[in-house]
Length: 299
Image (tube, rainbow, N blue to C red; front, side, top):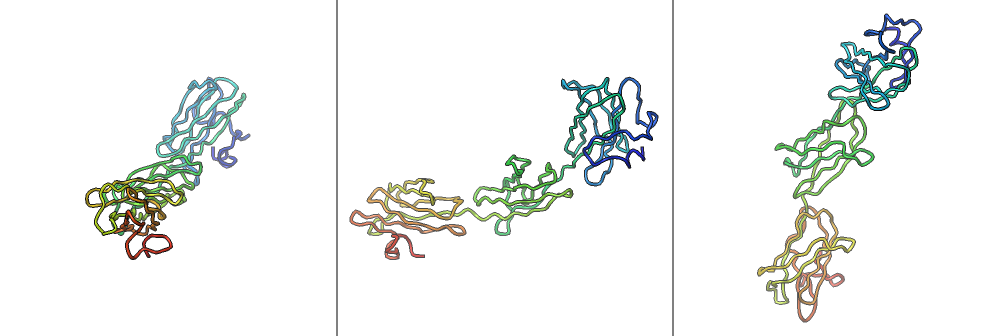
């Protein structure tokens, strides 16, 4: 078998039994069919995967047999006759491999190479504090979700069902702005800490020209494309609030009297005290500190 291993071709290719091998060299009995034999190896280093399960399936999906790889990763299964068969290798903590083999009248050697699952570990924090319950999702290059989890009390997370490759890591949590980053996972895994910025908010009071709060004023928040994100109706205190805003560019529109509109740029935690002034006589916003060009607040 040492000579057979030396003459093996690249991983994942069909191997032909070396001329020097005989049926006595094959692992397991040869009677009762045509042997298919080989080794189950780990990707990358060619290390044996003992205990791996090798299953033989015919073209109709019927299981013909299975074997457990020994301490050297060797296995043998037997096909009843010449034809095409499916060979499946699987092991705990590894991605299964499926291969289609064409078997004639001679024994066939085929090495199954299993890719190990690895993962991404890290922590999610905001302002040097852990974010508990944040949703962490890894998607592959085709947009399919490969694994997901939520952070623990310490903000830590682990995605343990990933194979080596490139992923998009998306993290979101209540009261924070979502974020996405690209992470490359190797055979040894990857570490990726994530920082979430607090979600911004716009708050203020709708006032009349005299400065007194206005009740039942309708307040709408529009995004940069002009879409209405949310609406509010003021109470007796005239106050309104739009929390957890993911973007930065918005327009606040107040109505109930002649309507007024004022642009607002959201940075950090947002804008507090963004008051709008409604008047029966003329439109005003933010009182004497309003800019004449926009009617909005002066920054």
